[in-house]
Image (cartoon, rainbow, N blue to C red; front, side, top):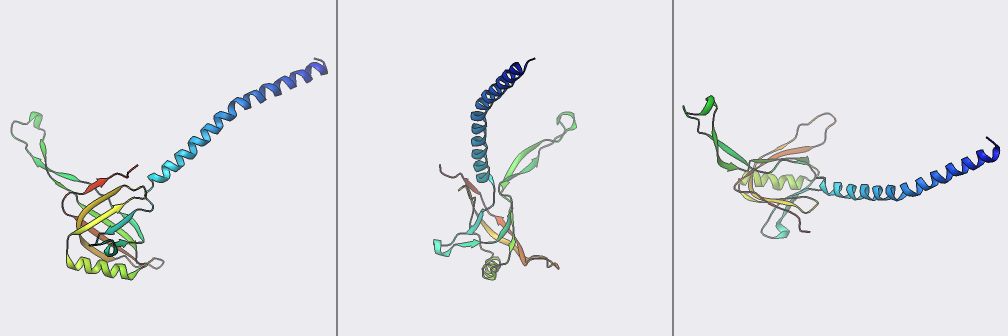
Length: 181
């Protein structure tokens, strides 16, 4: 192969590579845009920024429980009623759904604001069923009535942070509302 033929071959390969890059570049840009959109969507799925609020008679009376590190599960569970009889097929137990129970919501946080803990202690002592809202950063929210079943300061460890644990006992039906678009 002559030098001219080698040079021509190298130039043709470079042209082919440039064409491939020009074809790939728009695909890569579209892929990057998709990744950026997905990251924004994933941020709206994260739970950081979720707030727990005890609703008051007015907005000014609301108690936002701050510095929480965990807000437990919210939902419902049906009791089960055993309807097994001597006629049950192949000796398998049979059940039907009974009453629904919304359960409890465990909360854990840091006691950075003793005033809030003090207000929560008054609420626990009152045993009053009050309105609560758990609102996600996305705007979705759970609303329910509950009493503060337990409230305790957290374990004190050598390198720990002053914290607290509590449990809200839901009374009645919780309501989930999705964020408006």
